[in-house]
Image (cartoon, rainbow over all chains, first blue to last red; front, top):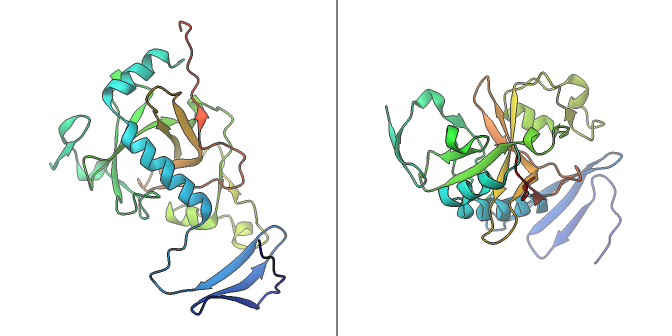
Length: 75
Length: 162
């Protein structure tokens, strides 16, 4: 992994058309401004994980599986 | 009264007032901005979060307290705004790094999405709870990034009798 030190207001360029600018830093988080073409997908990584879990969840639901789950679920 | 042809329950009538508005949809389901919460005695305490945009899409959900009565929720100011909640003044500043703690008197219903894997153990996603403001019927799926919760928390199921 490439690690680069930056201060507030400084930027990093990736390829020809993506710019990441550090806009603010506090004790345990940074605020990053991103300039990129509309075609580039930008996601917080944890959202990607939630998306995958949502797809799996929506595909797994049938009334039969829920009925089976109810027989085991401790009320 | 509009009718929705659902995958689980066939055609159901619903009132527009009973729909929930999810301004951002849910991750991977961004265009699903309106849902119904379907409650059936047969399936209690589980509920079905049914997309109004597409009757084929629904989620099995459960109040988080059924899994973890001490569940801790931290909300970002942007999330509180989306839910139409007043943002605590001290959290309007950047120094508020852990999100606002939600009071127990909150109007929020916190649900977790259940995944049933064929042949596997049922799990619930405690990292990404569904929050519904029962006052204004706005909802969203929040990501509790630094919570330490698992997106595949095992449901409390067992062989024993109740």
